Length: 454
Image (cartoon, rainbow, N blue to C red; front, side, top):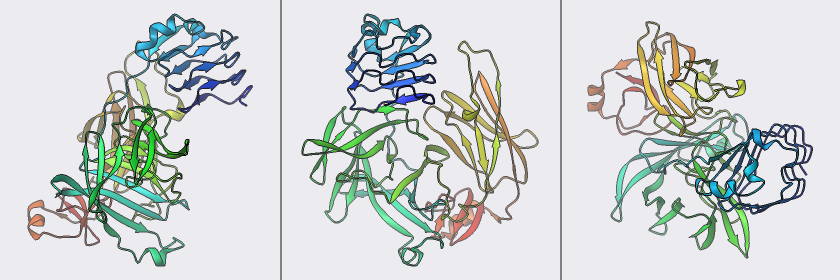
C-alpha cells in the first residue's frame, strides 16, 4: 500500500498491529522516522527496503520481533538510530538485522503520572459543526465538598452560545451555569458522584496495566498500553480504550492522563461509538496549557473571537551544544496576544526553560520556570499590563527565543482587594469562564462587568 510513496516522512503504527508484510514500505525515499508498537512480532522481507533518509527507528517490543534478514535491504542502517526498551538493548544488539543500526539507544522513559483532579484546572469543550465554534462549554473545579465521607472537588459547567448558532433559541434557554458533580481521585482512578444512582461512578482508571480490563455501566472495556507522542497538542501519556463485545474490540475514546477524554472530561467511554457532538479544545492548569487543539477558533465565548495578533520568536543558540541543535522553521516558537491573554507556543520544546516578560524599562513583569516537556504552551493574563511594548524571552543554558508584543490600556477601573472582599459579590468569574468564590487579583467579571483588582 505504501511502497514508493515519495512524500511519507513519518509513520507511527498503532498498538494491535503484529505484522509488517513483504515490501510494505519499500522505496519510501523521504522516510525519516518509523515507530513500531509493542505488539509487533514479525517483519517480512523488504519491508523497509531502500529508505535512504531514515534517521530514527523506534521499536517498543520488549521481545525482538522475528525479522527477515532482508527486511532493511538497501537501507544504510549505520546512519540511523534504533530506539528500543532499555531492558531489551542487549537482545537487539545480538540479533540481525537489528545489530546493523549505527546507534542503539533506550526509549525515553514515560513521564510521571499527572493527576486529573486538580484545583485550577479548566477544560474548554467545543460543539462540532462550525468554525468558528458557536457553542463552547467550560468545565472547572470550584471548591471542595464531602460526599459519603469522600473529600471531593465540585465541578461546574459554564456554557456560551453564539447568536449565529442554528439552535440558538433553544440552547440559550438552558442554564448557562450548571453543576457537573463531585469528583475525587484515588490510586490513579477518577470517580464522579452519580446523583441519580446515589453512588460514585468510575470515570477513568489510569492505573490499569497494558490491556487491562474494567467495567462501566455493565460493559467491559480494555485499555491499551501507555503511550507518548503522536497526538498534536499533547505531550503527556495517553492510552486508547476499546469496548470488548462478542470477541471484537470496537474503538472508543483516547484517554489522556491529567486531562480525561479527547471529547471532554465527562465523556469517558461509549458503547461502541464516539460521540460526534463534542471535542476538547483545551485543558489548562492556571497559566499552563496541558492540551491544545488550535484547529478551531472560538466564536462563542465573550470576546473569545476577538482578533489576535501573532508574533514569531527569534532563535539564538547561546552555547555550542554537544549534540547539533536544529530548529525547523515550521517548529519554531510563536506567540499570539489580544487585550487579555498572551499565548506562547511551547510545543516544539522539551527540557526546562525560563520564561520572562520585560516591559520597556527592562523590568520583569512575569517570570516562570517551566518544564516544557510536560506542557504545550502558556496562557498568560496580560489584561492589566500598561500600554506599551513588551519583550518575551524563553531560554535555557543552550538556546534562547526572543519575541515582542504590544498592549493598550483597557480602561478598566482598578480597585483594592480588601474592600472588594468585604462586599462579597456572588456572580464572579475569571476570564476562562470559571466561577470563583471571591475577587482575585487581576481581571474579574462581576455580574457581567469587568472589574480589575490590584
